[in-house]
Image 1: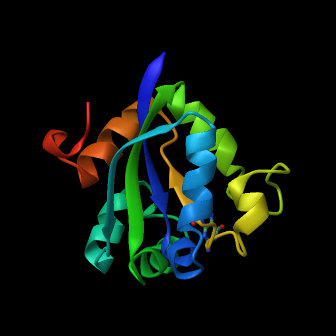
Image 2: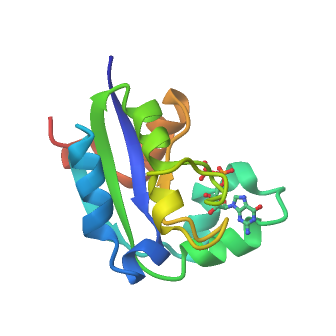
Image 3: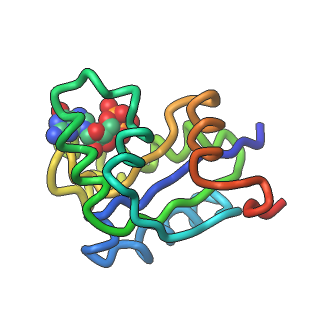
Length: 139
Ligand code: GDP
C-alpha cells in the first residue's frame, strides 16, 4: 500500500556530508522524495519533536544534538514506505544494525545515528504535519 513517512538527515549526517549518499539509497529503494527542506531546529522545537521521549535519560542530550545544526527533512512516499525506510535505516544502535543499512554504514554513536524515520502510521502523520503543510508536499 502506498504510504508516506517522515525522514530526517540529522545534524551529524549533514555535517559529515552524507546527504547525497543517504538520498541515493532512498531513491534506489523506490522511496520517492515528495517534499524536502533544510531547517535548523531550536532546542524548544527539538523538545517538541521528541516529546514522546521526555522521560528518557537521553532526552536533554538528544534534543541538544538535534538542535546543534541543520537537518534535512523530507516526506518519502512509496509502497510500505514506513517499514521500508525503517529497514533501510537499521537499528537505533548502529552496532546492532544489519549489514548494508544506513546506520550500520555511517552512524558513529547510538545518538548520532545519521537518520530518523517515523515508526508507525500515526507517528508519520504527526511528524509530517510537524514540518510540512499540505501545500509543500508534491502530489
Ligand atoms: P529511532 O526510532 O530508531 O530513532 O529510536 P528512538 O525513537 O528510540 O530514539 C530516538 C533517538 O534518540 C535515536 O534515534 C537516537 O538519536 C536517540 N537515542 C535513542 N536511544 C538513545 C540512548 O540510549 N542514548 C542516547 N544518548 N541517545 C539515544
